[in-house]
Length: 182
Image 1 (tube, helix red, strand yellow):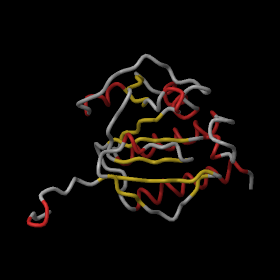
Image 2 (cartoon, one colour):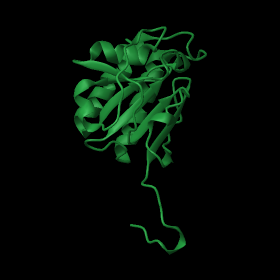
Image 3 (tube, one colour):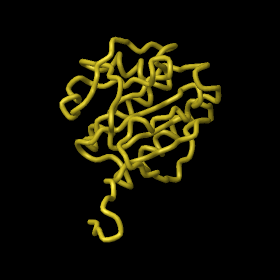
Image 4 (cartoon, one colour):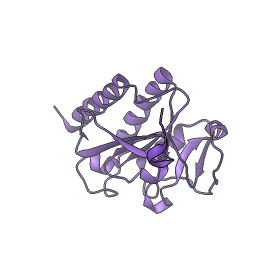
C-alpha cells in the first residue's frame, strides 16, 4: 500500500470516528489546521501537497453535507494563521476582521490555498472563535476554538505521518462552590 492510499484510509477512518461520536453538529463551525508536509512525513512547511489538500477538502465537504457543520481553514504562520472561510458563513460570527491576503502554497499552506480556490465566495479573516477543531500535524489551532477547550479522543491518532489533535469546547463554569450547573 502506498503512502497516499494509507493517508486516505487514515483520514476516512478519522472522519468516521468523529461522525460516530457526533463531533460534528449542524450549524457549528469547525476549524481545520493541516500540515500536508507532516502528513507526508516531512517537517511542517517543507513539502506542501495540493494533492493531499484536495483529498481532505473533498472529504470534508461530504461531511459538511452529511452533518451540517461548516468548515473553515487555518493558514500557516506566514499569514498569521488567518482563517479562510466562505463569506456566507460570516453571518454566524459577531466579531471578525477581514484581511487582505490570498493563501498560496508557500504562504498559507496547501490546505487553506486549496480551500480558497474551491470556495464560491472565499474571504480571509484574522481571527475566529469556533465550536471545535481538527489539527493535523500540530499546526496550533487552539487560538481559534472557544474557551473552555476540551480534548477529544478517538482511536485514530495519526493521518499519514501527522499527529492528530482534536478539541471541542464547553461552557465556562462560573459561580464557585455554591453554584449549580446544568
